Image (cartoon, rainbow, N blue to C red; front, side, top):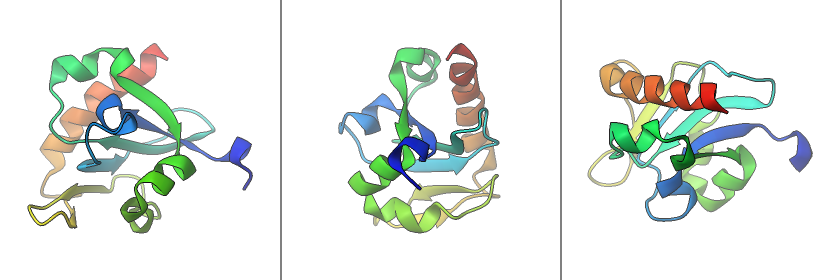
Length: 116
């Protein structure tokens, strides 16, 4: 796949600008043909921060995984998957147990998607 065809992901500005590493990632239903469905957050963003569309960016998934190679193994996961870092920095599947938290983040991200 060429870079111009690479899918995008929605990323918190804190992650995209290097202020934080990804801490909460989940795969939502894509909103456009070139959307991967991945939503990438530091994990500690407040609702007001995410409500501002300027605080999230569309980033090519390929570029983000190059900056954060530990995301790579997660990216084959199905829609509905969610992962967060544990205290040791390892990814933990929270697709079921953390559903309430990532669904709240997803609702905020979908509001941003609708403003783009």
